[in-house]
Image (cartoon, rainbow, N blue to C red; front, top):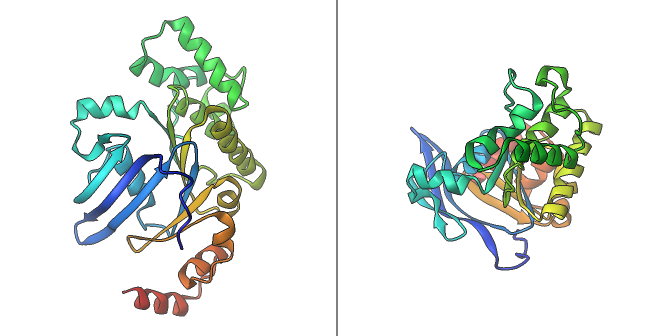
Length: 264
């Protein structure tokens, strides 16, 4: 399956990306483009390389073979000094939020501003208040992460991720560990940020309810390859057996073993 690209305006491109860790082949020739102001959801079994792919996009990992591009910059060939500037175009929401427990909400949100933006303290405070308002967490600046619920911590981490006005937001399992209501709050925020900030979003998730709601396009990674690239409606109606088994959450091991043998 292949979803028609909304346009040819790719902001990120992976060309023939291979990555192995020892004898474990994780990515095996991945070709994939991500488009401006669109939300691409990446699904696939645990350990299939989804988070590894995100790390290649921001230069935290480098491919064994292939190329990684952000706009007209070849990310996998940039020295670390130039990667620092490239990364300011990205917001990264980590799976568990990765907030600093010893810092207040304001200190957490302002951390990237202090590191990468030439702003006065007053300007940083104003920006902090602005992004907290965007994620529905106004007036929490003086709280510590331990005083917040899991969903609130995710929203604070999202506020930090957008503090530098990124062009791209990477979400690694944004709804993991949240109940359905708090998960839907995160889904609504992802949609809101795309609509209001016109960011490009790449979302790694196992949550198909979330995927169907937020995605313009859903890509499935399996055995190191892209095996599906479709709109949500197209994916719902697929007859491809591996994709069908995954999106329906079926765990018939005999069937899965047979499918894997067929792929090999």
